[in-house]
Every structure is written in C-alpha cells, then in structure tokens.
Length: 69
Ligand SMILES: [Zn+2]
Image 1 (cartoon, rainbow, N blue to C red):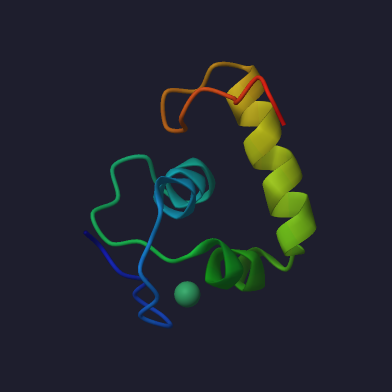
Image 2 (image 1 turned 120 degrees about the horizontal axis):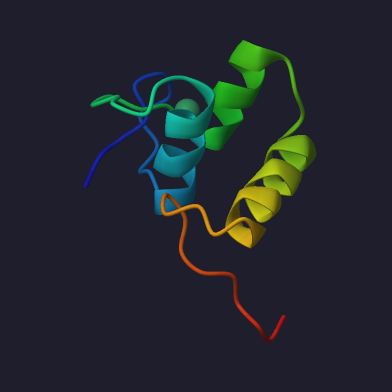
C-alpha cells in the first residue's frame, strides 16, 4: 500500500495510475489525484474524465471499465 507524498492519503490504483500517466510511468512515489490536479492546475472532474478516457483506451494502468454503472 502506498500513500500520497503530499497529503499522506492512502492511494488507490486510480491515484497511482493517474500520477504515472501525468508525471512519470516509472514513478515509485505517488501523489493522489487531488494533489496531482493541484500540481497541473486542473480540476478533479477533468482528472476523472481523463481517467475514463484512458480506461476506454484499455490503458493497463487502470482496472477495466465497469459495464454496469
Ligand atoms: Zn494527496
């Protein structure tokens, strides 16, 4: 289990996946979506839209998209 290097929040695979996409695929330390958004000056809503798009593209960093939403 890893934690956000900024706010110490426990990270999900979405946090680490988003960080890898935005910052560095080989990262070993991560920030949560909220802190990554702050760094890139985007909103969390935008971040989730990007994540959904990565999922649609079949990005291996994120779990497969849920069919039943
Ligand atoms: Zn954080």
